[in-house]
Length: 157
Picture 1: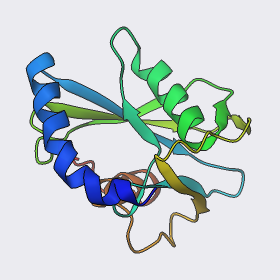
Picture 2 (picture 1 turned 30 degrees about the vertical axis):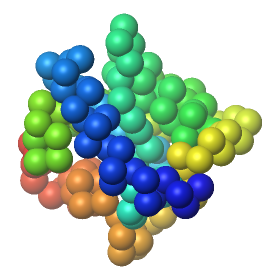
Picture 3 (picture 1 turned 180 degrees about the vertical axis):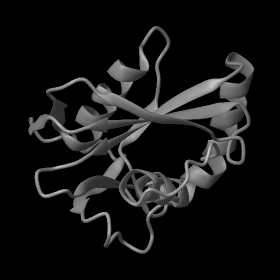
């Protein structure tokens, strides 16, 4: 669905305006899924450049833990088999004022049915944290450096 790459820059500001009118603050989650070989799972969206940690928004009435488990399943097909562990919480004001992102680590999971390719996820891949693709999102790269390299925790996404 490459059309989303072209349409998203125009529709995203409308989505943000609607979100701002209907919510004072927004909350998102990102999953750091680590396999038995120590690789992390990343996704490439059809509407955003680069590789990202799987994740998305927390729905009304949903806990952050439930949201990260749901997003991991929806975007990658993986089913969490253990409780997600909160790693950090970050302000995403640079990108969207009032937005926050909770980062969870998930080490116990199993492959479920393939995630439906509804046009949101273009590609899913496992990567060694020391050999990430060049185009990993800046915030995701910083979170992985904090987790795997002991980099100082940055409260900003």
